Image (cartoon, rainbow, N blue to C red; front, side):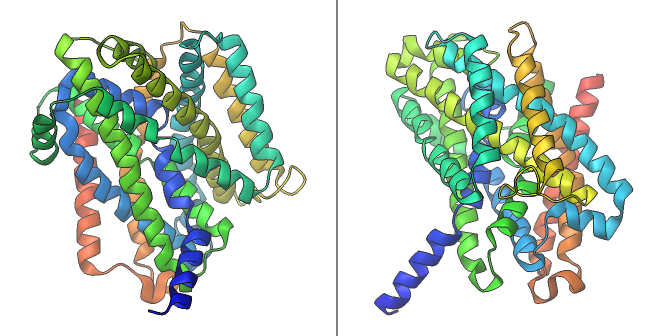
Length: 410
């Protein structure tokens, strides 16, 4: 390969890269960090094995969504509405809207609790964050917004550092990471479902497909998007892995129960030092701010696509009033509950992750069905082995969802 060809490939990777890394990183939001922290505190290293299979699933699912977006030039909700009708689309989007509103509340709660560690009151931090998020998304163009998201994604390295500072037993870490250990208990299944629901969230698939479309990625350059997707999934999973490691190494041996990522940050200090606490809290603030921007954008994308309205970060209030209006309402409704510490935020967070996990199966079904439409995908349809893997994942998610429902009623 000539130097010119190598330079061109590098430039294309840099031009295309972004949606995959950003979408995967945004899955590690305040609710996700709380879920991983609770998993480590409650079960030690016992859920580390889930990271590898969930990473593979995330790569496969997001690869399909980006391929759908690049080939069709349309968002996921738009394709579901065109292919299966407005009624089905309405029910799917309604369920996702409930889960996403709870997720936005958890993002602002994460901002409030992380800054309280640095003695900033929530009546200052939450309104300031809401205004900052609203101004960035509604006033900046897509390129600037994507750069801000990308910087936020890079800052997740704080969690990897905090994982090393916790000084875990690495032989135990490696063993539990590669050897599955399953418990047939309601808390274990709920947390496993929460990990699946926060790592492979339905809204991420709508966001990544809409982002690829808005970015204008062409089919000829799609191979570079696959690099973006794989890099994002692996990086995000490493962050999740080290969050669980940090909690498992410090909190689990002492039987410390937590209800939020902020509590995990404070609890780390006696065992891993003040620097680890600062890194964990700073990581939570970064993740919460990133989630507070991306989750409302994803929600605005799929509602506008499903109902046939103009959408896009590049469009102002005159060009896309519904898109920007939904985004604004979600910011307001998400910020208000976070002002009140008595709101049961752990239930809101974990509840949102579980709802996302339950909704994941129908969303995956629509994705794989769309991938099989010859008129839509042509030569870019899934192969039989790819389809077999995806249907196996769907059946597994359904089984976990049934386990959550049955366990809840029992």
